[in-house]
Image (cartoon, rainbow, N blue to C red; front, side):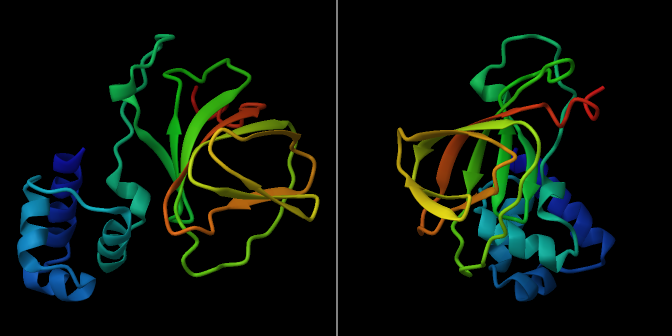
Length: 189
């Protein structure tokens, strides 16, 4: 994936007629680092990639490739790809090769730290959610109550309850989440 991201950065930079130095100045990343990144010789963290995305005037999710999904029922760990990035802080990984004609959506979501201490809005929708914390601490708001979920903790709710969640620590929180119904069912056909 590092090589693909690097190629996209180089193409976007060239399309905008930016030099390595100009991109470096806009992102506060060294020219050498950007050069290595474009050649796939180094990796980049999400925060730095977000700065590159802003400097190139693209969405962070544009750096992640969505390949054609197989119709097989087994998904290998090395096949897992980023499927979606929300608000530049929720990175979704589908745990199924084929969501077509399925009722539930199994995902892993990396919840990046809420470093700006943004207030979150609670919402509701139809269905059910099951959340299991794999690492970190997840703060869940449910019907105006606040819960701290630690590794190994789970929550199973009807989604028509007012709810939302966030990460108020300084490390990434990883959760396993299963939603019913499958809101991606229409999009996968």
